[in-house]
Amino acid sequence: MISGVVTKGINGIPRIPGDKSISHRSIIIPSISNGICEINNILHSEDVIHTLEAFKLMGVEVEKNEKKLIIHGKGLNSLNVSNNEIYLGNSGTSARLLTGLLSSQKFKSVLTGDKSLSNRPMRRIAEPLIKMNAKIHTTNGSLPITIEKSDLKSTDIDLEIPSAQIKSGLLLAAINTKGETKITENKITRDHTEIMLESFGANIDIQKKGGRKIIKIIGQKELVSNNIDVPNDLSSSAFFIVSALINKNSRIILKNINNNPTRNGIILALKKMGAKISLINERINNNEKICDIEVVNSNLHGVELGPEFADLMIDEYPILAVAASFASSPSIFRGLKELRVKESDRLKLILINLQNCGVDCKSENDDLFIYPSKNYKIKNNFIQTDFDHRIAMSFCVMGTKIGPLNIENSECINTSFPTFKEQLNKLGGRIF
Ligand code: S3P
Image 1 (tube, helix red, strand yellow):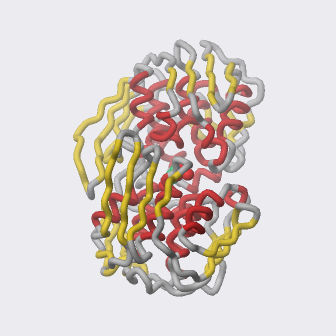
Image 2: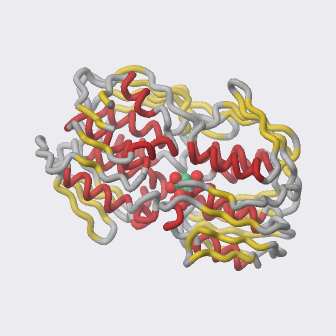
């Protein structure tokens, strides 16, 4: 895929797909609930399809009509054993959440994934589950993972790594475990799992103390399905927001976007950089905050962000780094260790690709430094993505200013945003 320079700005109302994190949970939680769940606006991307296929393999009945996906829940303990390995493609969320959920089921499962997912760390979810008595075998700390039938015990768990995927995997194990499991988060991460479990009637108590969160869950209470309206994805919106900010004569409106306060670091960070972003029609749906967002091209300046921002916007650093490359002063983003274990080593790829685009930047102790300039001389216009969708989309946005950039393996964008190219082109992008 080649991304070329935009000539007349980025203008209009893009169609942003449903939120990826909420879409995964919208399949998983209704599948283990009682009753029928109609899901509106679920994301149809490869990652979410892998979660859906996993539950179909385990006997969950799924119907699809033009607008909705309908899930016939089986209750906490009625999933069927899958006779085949469960293949999860590139999806880390599916892998961590299913490892937790399947630890509490009364059958053996094997989870596999693609090359990138098979290199990602899984001890972080296996180890706390093993404390709950789960019988999990990783392959040198990664997929394939074998989960044996076991009898889970409720336990107190202190989460060392700030990760919504680990927390959610544990919650999905705890929901089917007798007694009270207590999970302490030392840093707040996205809370879509807690929100949905609560609204499905789980016996869950959440207390916030300073920057910590204590979740107590009493398991083995059957859940009752609710219908779900999936809001549109803020992480996917970020590529459009930055495209509009850095290109002259731009104005866009994004509709129905998830504005959950555990996820909205990108909006806070860009506003700190002087971005003209307005949140309009703020409202609540299915206990999730949503809003529309208006963005006008802006003169950005650099910013220093501490590690606390990383918890609120870990997926958005590649696109934030692109925005920072067009600011009037340097930026420092601190505490990006977790970026190294995403779909790729994102810190490494941000540096390699920005440097190839002529941007002066460096990393020191997992902090990223960007020194923007007015004119960039491209050194190599082949963008290395390592099949990482967010790196691919971020450098498409870079291409709107300094292109043409040739984005390698751009089909990886299908993991989260299959209509990205069509939508950006509709607004003035020149991707071919
Ligand atoms: C996700 C949590 C985050 C995020 C990922 C989706 C989720 O991962 O990077 O894209 O849906 O829970 P971590 O929890 O590992 O930080």
